[in-house]
Picture 1 (spheres, rainbow, N blue to C red):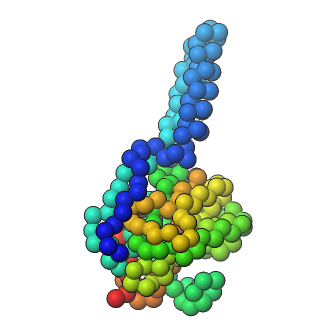
Picture 2 (cartoon, rainbow, N blue to C red):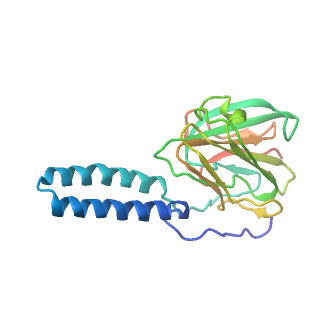
Picture 3 (cartoon, one colour):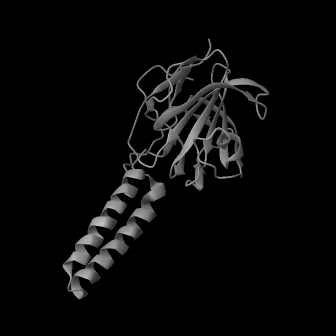
Length: 230
């Protein structure tokens, strides 16, 4: 698609978590100061610092946003849209967009994974749709269709259509999608963000060559998950 455009901002902490991290840290510091000044038992102070400092560090880890660029050839390339683990590789009947069988690859994100999502392919965004739904555990098969989700339909330069679905889970209650219908999209760009653990499904044309296996760990924007048909 000609010269690839890189739009990523050089950030280390995702902007979705800036307010949460700043305000929570201020509250923790304020309470810690009060405990130190007005409570004689220093055990209470150190216990508070240890517990809530650990919690804050976990939240900080959750919102980290590493700067990544895919260094390989992007023609017919499908990269992992998320950090996590491959939990599904199977043919499914997709009757909402394609009305045909598709190859689905699903990546489950745990609480400790980076939760930024990347575009899996270069192309043009045909549509972006948000569907309300349930909040089943994200690794269950029914989560793909019944849970709240956001669908991004992309057409690649070679004419293949790829569907990327962000799925809410039992804990994830907010899906953020940056993709806009009609815009070009590129590997290395952020597609969106899912708060707390959940999963991302990618629907590929039959005949695609799968390059991952069940249970394999993936790195968003880095792991090659499939090659599209010629």
